[in-house]
Image (cartoon, rainbow, N blue to C red):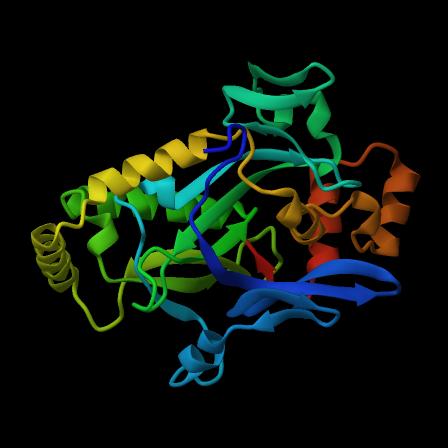
Length: 306
């Protein structure tokens, strides 16, 4: 195994909520109110759709808002990894990854382990350069039990919800998380801060049409069948953990430019609204209320993903 290279689950495609579009010569992320499943092939017009994208839309009135899935591992943190991530927005290279206590940072002397004060207390994180960043790998269908589709997010609501669900489901299933019939579901909510604009986030539940008790029984039966056939889930989890630990940064340079463009746009590239900016210039340092109003005004009419 090559040292310094994180060995991650094989990826067959992507799950996204939105896309990157070009406006006035600037490429900006545009959010959506539904899932899109794409391949790993990108053309000038964007990512090519995966055949599952159209197949799963049937019976959902054209809006893909739930995806039947299974997980690869019993350990929640292997299926969903979340950390504070800082990328070089020019080159797309990862510079620092931390968990709020410690971080791995690329310095002139190489990669060093340093304290991580979280983005609010880090001088390198100014301007939203460092964000919570999560990656979820899920299996769709039964063709490739070790292949996965990856969903990436920098939304607090998605990260909190996915982390909680996975740990709860692992606990109540008796450590049979990889055997549960699950569903990736898009949920929406409004907050005072969003001024009525819908905020969308991702959740995991048992598959539609099944009660929790039915899902747990199915997981138990599948686990017994796998064990009888010689399927060693514990060994698979251990192999995955070794693979993740083999590198300092999970994302490869092939992926990071696209990740930065979609999830870490520069402040200069983000759309602005003239009136709030003029108000801030007139009154000096903005208050918290002015900041929230400015953000909400820019987002009115646009669904966001959290």
